[in-house]
Image (tube, rainbow, N blue to C red; front, side, top):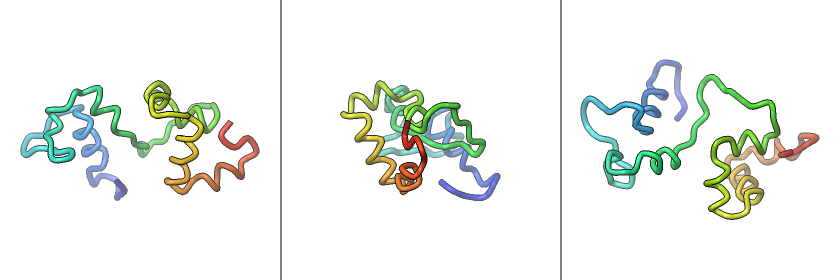
Length: 103
């Protein structure tokens, strides 16, 4: 989600992660109310970059993996997944021009 400051992006993200419950209506994921999902599983599906970006003083790879290394390992080769994800996001060309690339 992208939008002006104060338009509700952070509120929507907090609602999707079930940090608090909506006052009205419901939030559906694949047609299922998010209240039906296991909370840990639901939150593992969601990733976002906050308006106030916080990056670790580490490699690009470590910043991308932060807090998700174990779950990404379950998907396959970590380096391949990171490479494909960065290509999908359109940032791979920027990263590979860096002196240390992902490392």
